[in-house]
Amino acid sequence: MAEEIQVEVAYALPHKQKIITMTVPKGITVYEAARQSGIDQVFPEIDWENCKYGVLGKAVAKPKERVLEQGERVEIYRPLIADPKEVRKKRAAQAKQKREAEQP
Image (cartoon, rainbow, N blue to C red; front, side):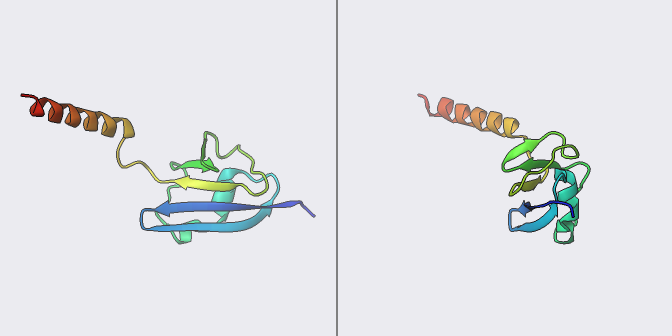
């Protein structure tokens, strides 16, 4: 009998989230656990090949190779709507314009 571990798979939208706890064979990868979780029944929009994955808040560069340990949580990340760097640049430019407009 193969040894098993317990892991979680999580996905969230701004208005809805789901965490699935599952028992899987030891040696399973991040990608395999995510696919086997069935979370795409709740979120059919998940693009398995192009989405980003993480484990306990840390990005995983190679989800098809990263083996899970007992108790770890796989996180499936949504695509970014806006580039955070561009948002910060825009906010800084607006703040600068505001400061310049307030000067006599």
